[in-house]
Image 1 (cartoon, one colour):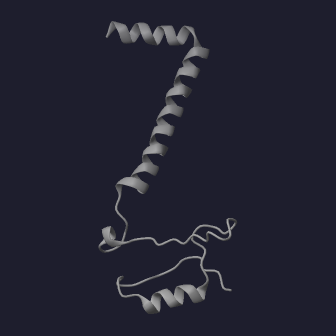
Image 2 (cartoon, helix red, strand yellow; image 1 turned 90 degrees about the vertical axis):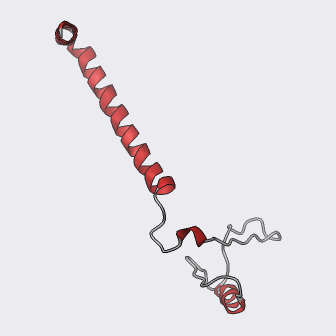
Image 3 (tube, rainbow, N blue to C red; image 1 turned 45 degrees about the vertical axis):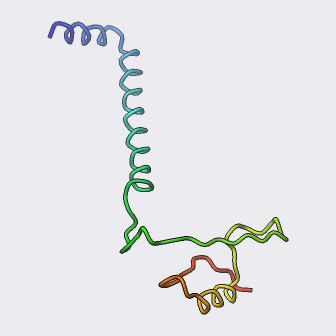
Amino acid sequence: MNDFKFAFRQLLKNPGFAMVAVLTLALGNGANTAIFSVVNAVLLRSLPYDAADRIVQIVTRDTRNVATQRGSISLTDFADWKEQNRVFQDMACKGVRAD
């Protein structure tokens, strides 16, 4: 108990140091909480779908046009893929561009 009293008296003698120490602890705790929240949401928590371990992502790559963004396909290509699909239970797309 004497150590706490001594520490408290020292902090009262140096209010600048006390403020820096408190701010450092607050920033450290805030950063730790933010990083853990992101890691928990992205890596630890499973996706909110049934059988989330069976979800896959298919991407394309145009070797002729280096400037093409990864995964950009036309709506007609996706419609052909979906029609000819014999492997996947269902297919969906996000951000399809119309040609």
